[in-house]
Image (spheres, rainbow, N blue to C red):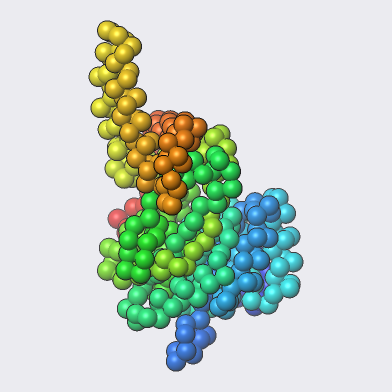
Length: 366
């Protein structure tokens, strides 16, 4: 893995003694926890411009039934007052530490946090989340139940505080699936607990704006480490609140996934759906507009399936609500448009594609 960005300052607790660049392959530190008790845990959180939401996350950390032994906030270049808020939080809580990094993306921020951590188990979450009070306790309980566990993934619940975010969660979030301990969504890096040696063996997180967590999970699985699931370890995750913000988020994700050559996991599936509808668009232009009813019916089935899948305990009226159907349809089309737009722009930006290609080759040791 490539060397991470230099950390300019460490605020709170004991500062890290090294002053050069970080290396994710540096020797692991011994755990500060007694091996006869439950494991010591470092909570690592990458942040950037989170002044509006960071208070809620800090409060949920303080309310944990099993508090982390240390909390490392890694700031990736905030300019909105986030750093000042975190400095004050570190002054009030001796287990909080702030690491100020220069323009670190979330994956690199996590790497910096782990490289500075004191314990052998690393919990991950992100700014913008709120942790359930027993979140860390549930993760540790599952990890402690199996000495072979290398990573434990918890659950997440979208914050649906508006009709738009409720429809957005239906449009693009995965449904819960059954696991060994219950139903869950995931894996989700912002609700996870990982052994430090597993992070080390996987090469840490790639320096990407998106998909870095998926690549990390895939590398852990490829190395043969054991996944465990903790459905009761839940975080509340903020969705994008408007259609414009949703488009920009998926546009960015689309670009990065293309640069990382991951189209087969996302883009090709969406492209196949529209390729199936292409003959009917041609027939509509050539013969009659009525042919458009065929691709519209296909899109309607796709939207209806998602609504039915997300109905939970809601009744038939909830499922058949035409306004909900319209919202989910529009959000689905917006995500599809962002996917294709990001795909096109990513192909045009060859310099960024080359940079990420070289970065991924370096990670693999090619």
